[in-house]
Image 1 (cartoon, one colour):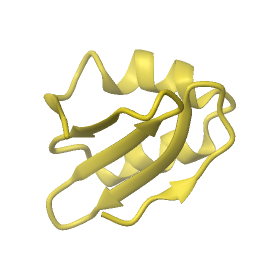
Image 2 (spheres, rainbow, N blue to C red):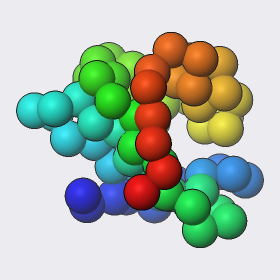
Image 3 (cartoon, one colour):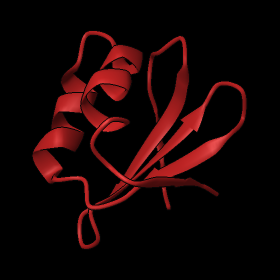
Image 4 (tube, helix red, strand yellow):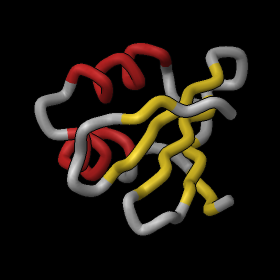
Length: 69
């Protein structure tokens, strides 16, 4: 999945596949996680969030299944 760099203390880059709703996050420690069935507005909210790390912790991790890749 193609990812784009973001400005964050915890997240290095993000990618999103609209057809599957898969959100992929590359963390600054090098780990990569995919979150499943994430709606496009949630992805848009992530990109617009003043704190990407806080958004991930409050709006994504508690609500979507995920796996390390």
